[in-house]
Amino acid sequence: MTRIGVIIGSTRPGRKGDRVAAWVRDTAAGHAGGTADFELVDVKDYALPLLDEAVPARMAPGGRPHTRRWAERIGSYDAFVVVTPEYNAAPPAALTNAIDYLYAEWGGKPVGYVGYGVFGAVMAVQKLRAQAGVLRMADIGPQVALTLREDFENFAEFRPRELHVSEVHGLVDELLAWARALAPLRARSRATAGSHPR
Image 1: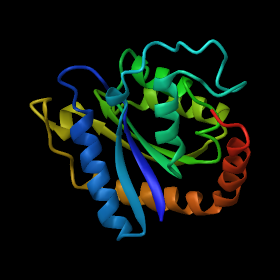
Image 2: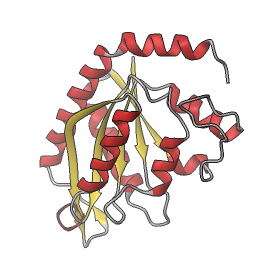
Image 3: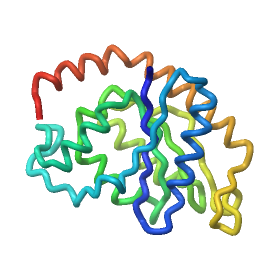
Image 4: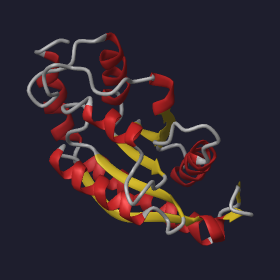
């Protein structure tokens, strides 16, 4: 079964990302009808310090225990949905830091985006799309943009509009199609990674 990680990109106190990500997971799983497994992946759970590996992940796998734990989790998925807010026209530093810890674990996997913020986090997602290309990920087109004014009651309580349900469905359909198409590439990458244990 295809395994999809729904990444919660915000780690700040009082964040809204955990509720948004749970809605994405449940909406996606219902639409996929048991053909894929959607799991929440909370960056906060890994307490990753600012990147502390001496060698870039593109050159060699990290050796620190927190890096290995993060790599094992990310490496187990076939695709991702990244749920991100937008801070100063960019994704959270904790999210980009977590992405930077790894390289091979991201490659050959499609990624879709659900943004939330004043303008739906479109600028944050734009930056993440550029990063995905460098990591050899398949950056899919459909995107869900949730706005604080229209999808959060009093800018606080998450109340997504109905139109976003069909947007998540479209994102899931394309994500799964790409995940199936890229399966041979992931199999080769995993075989190569297996010959260079951490």
